Image (spheres, rainbow, N blue to C red):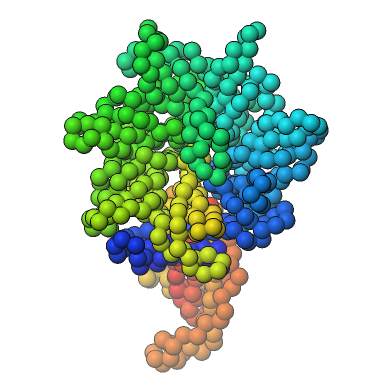
Length: 553
């Protein structure tokens, strides 16, 4: 279990908070926390581009740890796009700025996405003369959105070279309005999938009826308001999306919901309503999540409502590759570490990374029928582990406050470095947190000298070697040296005196050669030389120090 400093130092430990939290309906102590956190932004804090943060949108996350989110200065609309990378917060765009291509000014923003290299893309509206025009932009550039796209959903930009989105397009000379999966790039626009096209299905070919389903005016601060308009695109350009289909041979018959994934022009079926629920006897899938998630290695995750003989209705989260799905969690499953508490509803946001770890939002129910909403992680082994739940106390800039809601944006919030971003609400204030969800921190091991006899030498300098490991990668290995004061005299002193060591201050940390396999050569003074070795991972987490005492005589 990892513990971090508090909010004022940019890091907090969920374990210390969750372990002692008091729920309104019962006392509930969870056995462990699923993450440690860094605070990125909080309502009222100073923000780049002028006034302090006001209303924070649901954040998105890049493969390189860049966090992006929207901020609304007042109730009149959304006015800026913010990004944070490695502790540096920057203003991407704000209302009133000139568009990158010139000729217009931004008036509002709707959604964000982050590419491999940390660049931020966003949906926005620009005022060009008397005309208000919607578009898609990335930092420093715009993307030509064809006039035939008359409406489109949030951009997905994780691949870094293409923009993927659902849209409504005008097709043919008659400009027939048609749903589409559109891929935009420097080469132009490609409608990779159109309503009316045929897709493969285990039960026979199906015809796509609906792709883009904007059922309400979208509010980018409320995740459900964009249901049916989003897709996910992974780092290699493969997509995951939900569509509505009919049998190709009988298009007037009843419709079904379906999730597809893969290359935009070679989609494969993942799940269809009416299918047997994977790994669950007696259940079939009824409704499918409108926002399936696809990882960098093509793992897919989604939630679904279920019906079956055992229960009138239920819900579950599924993950895996198309054709090889497994259940992650099901309504009715016990909440680990909380006797008598069960997952009541898991038909909500879900996201997966390349290891197969799945993060999901769920409602939990207590024996007295009280409920709470929270976020859990299901790692590839073990049971679900809590990340955050409403009702707990979290540190904020003005002290500990009770969380009234937690939420996350589904796809694009969990990367292969095991980082996850979410929003916590405290009454009328919001906070954005970046979580490290790994179960372990980096560690270092010495290869030489392993034996005690090898740690006593006459040499004036000495080579030490070892290994370091971390599931996100080792960024660097460093060492410091403390040398014994008056070492030669102490070697001649009594046994008692020899054990009363006095060391000089530590040296400035120096880099070892290598990372996963490392070594360095260090000068030795007469007496004891205390050497500490630490590894730092690519998220900035530092291992516990490996301590060696090398004695020179």
